[in-house]
Length: 373
Image (cartoon, rainbow, N blue to C red; front, side, top):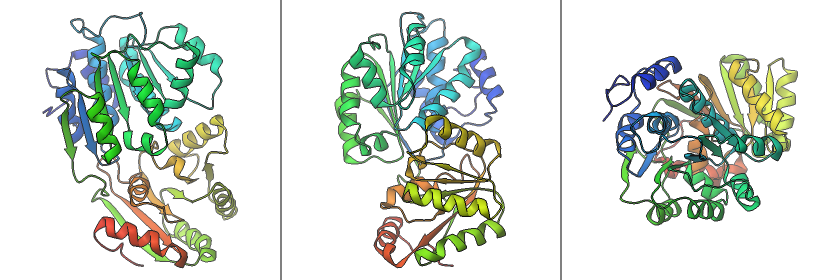
């Protein structure tokens, strides 16, 4: 158990990097995961979204890369750490954390994701990065092209493993794991642990430490949930009313790309600073939208479920389910974008008569009704 980031198991250089990054006290998942990872153990970390999983693996992984006495400290031969993430946005977020904590110690991180040109990625690989963060599809592309060799990898991290398998990446993940050394250290972090993830764990992890924080696949208690029953045609006026009455950064989820565009136009016409995030937007547009939402240029972000994970934006005051999600797990991940890092937040859902079945499934999973308004 790591009770403080001043723990003597962390080198002074890492403690300094943690302080510069603004971390003060370890979250429960960080407190329980960092020690076993430093010991070289495989690990399964299951915790609710928004509990600090990225730093829970980034801090000890970077510590192992930079310690003079570590077997992982040899540089220049090739990547020593590979982190797989389900979405481009989450991969970029993870890479930012590695850069923030490791750049001062000379650790070089490269992001390899789809939707971007191969040229810069090939150039980056030639520079022998220490850490590669990527999506399974693009990592697999580089393996097929023989532009990436993973024989030097000492630590592999599967982040949001449940989401990766949900998105159909199981074949790519299996292939990637097969071409990494058998004596690697494997870390699997996830918000839920369905059967598919348990099967993956049994096949590829060796006597892993298991950490479970809180109740798996339940919303954090600091999220205030509420529900409005509203016909589809009344949802946009209701959203505009809420935006006018309540301040703060607001993330709105819609079911389709076209509806996201339409709602964004209505929100913008009402005078709110708004942007959109969905699969039809280019990578540069998606980055601009997330950066603008993060730095306050936009107050409202309208998104499809591509953003249900991977958005780590501080102080999102309000999440709105403009359309009800299809599964209870998606509901948990959506509303988990607020109340992050010990903060509190509000999650509002609009349910039309046609969405009664989705609502019933979600409430059965929660074990209670979402409070009506």
